[in-house]
Structure formats: structure tokens, C-alpha cells
Image 1: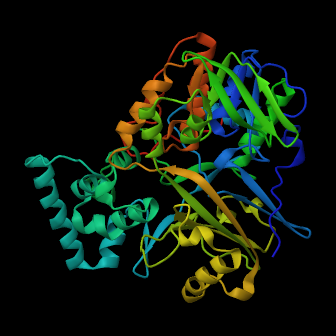
Image 2 (image 1 turned 135 degrees about the horizontal axis):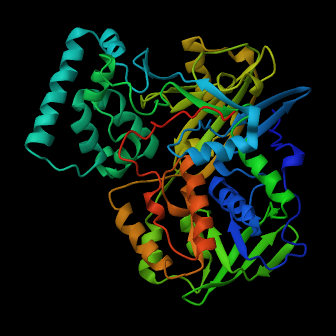
Length: 502
């Protein structure tokens, strides 16, 4: 089967590499993901040019959109779909200025497939009762009351993710749909996962809030939850970053793909020079400021001289979760109505599927659809070493059994693998990260941003915010607390849907 053409639509993509002449940049941005591009865009608005480098062929990082061509047919897919939501209206305006009418509101349908039945996500109380039956639902209620007594009245501390979800949902419901899926994502027991993961992703969401919502007691004031709908670009999330690339190039900002840093020199107070490698060779630049959005643990290995032993030791113990993606094009009009389906059971090898057509009909040719299948892994796991044919053979029995599609309906299969996708929040990560950050803060002209750059699980809106804040730090010559981005004290997937400006 052919491999995909990762076509970012030529007009949107920068050309060139670091082997040709490079002028010394005022700001060097390492990585053209959401954070790095947002920083360069804000600097450009203020008349400050930057040099943006990207190891891949295409901008957008994990939020890029890939183009797969099969003869005259064209299929588009994100690397795992990225819906957009935010509490920051500036970000909506920022993106709308780029996309205009290509920016659409999409109804959301996300479900979990558990024990042969579908459950809406987040939890729909009536549906749970209907699917589980009266007595099993009562068990969930009793477990929740006992958990509130144990963690509330008796004040048992929340030391792990397991403590957090049991305290907020009860043991029975936590084990039914949360603990198993979380362990599937991270590959470690929930007792070894830091409660920060729950506080960041589901703070404010608990069984009582679900019950109140079922009774219509949520209240009508406040922002509308993106549980119901979200914005999505007509031709994929990557459109946002391709458009940023176009704007930057028009304003004179240089973006160089197939280019990566191989050595970062410093004198203990400032970064003094960076060696950039491309297929044409290596050049050295001496930027005034460096914005780093590549994986933090990798960046530390580039430093010359290297960090002290306690820093390198802390970095070596930080873990990343990788992903394997199988993308199928189908001779079928539609598989489901879902944007995503989650599969918490460990007996099912994949964790999540998505159908791009349900995000935007323009992601597939008429009468066709596609299916994106995600596996969570550590590099070196069995799934990481599998070929495309082996992964397809692994998943097909499930989809044929469930009536999703048959082998005959599969046109082509494409396999991608990405390391450094999820920073693992184990119980020791916070102390290790503090050791690293404490030392990096000594480098006055370094700003590190984004999910990989800060070793922090963020969605694209928070990465964009980090990039914007990084630009202000450079323009204003002062520090901002980057760790406050995305730390809202409520359910992570809750935010306003701003109407388009007229």
C-alpha cells in the first residue's frame, strides 16, 4: 500500500533549509508548532522578525493536517483531531482573522464503548442508569457517598490520580470508565499517576455535577460548555498553522523546514549561539532570544556545556508516551455519527477512533469516509514495532464484529508513529521538572513553551497562549508565569463559544 503524501498545500509551506545563507535572527524559534508559530506571529505584528525552524516537512506540530491522495481522490486528516475551545476571546479573534469563513461550528458527539454499549462522554446520568440497570446504578451511588465521606468528611488526602477520581466519582464508576482508560493512555497504574492530571483535565467534574446537570440544575448563566459544540476549520486544524505560515512569510519572517538544532551554546547566563542542521549542512546563528518548543528532554541534550548532573538526572527520569496511528480510507459514505469514540477496555488494543468527515465534510471526497485509529505506547512496545499490515490485521476483527466496516471496504491503510506525544505525569514528575526549570530560568534569553517545550499536557489553545505570552516577554523584557496558562479551576473542556464577529 502506498505511503501518504503529506501535502501542506504548497502555497502554505515554507521552502528552503538552513544550509543556505541565514542572517543572524533577533529571535530564533525552535519548532513550528502552535506555540512557536503564535510567538512568531505576535512578534511580526510588532515589527519584530524571527527565524522559525522546523524538523518536519510541514508546520503545525501535532496539530498539523495531512493530505492523502489516491489518484484523483483527496483525503485530509489531523494527527488525531483537535477541536478548538478556549476561555480567551483573543484567541478566537486571532484565528478568525486567519480563517474567516473556513472557521465552522460543529456539533459534538463523543462516546465511550464499554461492555458492548455506548456511553456519552462526559457522563450522561440517565444513559448510565438505562444501560447499567437500577441495581448497578445504585451501587455507583452508594460508592460515591462512601467516597465523599472518606475523602471529604474524614479528609483522606488526594495523593494520586486514583484518589482523585475515586473521591469525585466513587470506586465503581471510576473503575468502569476512568481508571482503565487512564492506565491505557499512560501505561502505568493510576496509583503511580500524579493528581495534577485529574486536576488539569477534569477539575470541577464529578458525579454530583453530572447528576445536577441531568436534573437541569446547572443554571443558565455562565459560558456555554463545549461539550455540545466546538469550532473546527473547514479543511482541518492544520489550516490554522498553514495560514500563520503564509502571514509570517508575507511579513518577512523566515520559516525553514527540515531544519533542527544540533548544538545550543551558552555561558551560564545566556544562550550565545545555536548550530542548525539541514540536508544542505550546518550553520551557526547568534540570536538575541531563543524560544524553545521542541521536547524539553531533547533540548537539554543539545546544551553546551551540558547542565549539571542533578538536572540531567532529573531529565532522564521524565517519561513520554508515544502514539501509533492507523488511518484508513473507506469505500463507504459513513461509519458512525461520532467525532470520537473512546475504548477504555484493556482487551481492545486501540484507545480512540475518529471519523474526520464528522468534523468537516470537506475532509473526504463525496461518498467516501475515513477512520483514524489511535494506539498509546512506549517506544519499544510491540505495537511500536509492528508494520502497517500487522496493525491492520490487529484491528479489523473488532470493526468487522461491531459492523463498522469490512475488509473489502478498506481502500488503503496508512501508518504513522510519533514519539514525545504525552508527557507522563507520574508521582515524581513535578519535583524532577522543578529541578530542570530552576536551572533553565538562569538562561535570561531563553523562553520554553508548548506541550513538548514545558513538559506539560496542553491543548492547542493553551499552546497558542504560551506563544503569545512568550512574545510579550521578549517585547517587554520581563518574565510572566507561564504555568498559569490553562490552570483554570474547573472542567478542562469547558469554555465559551464566541459568536463570529460581524
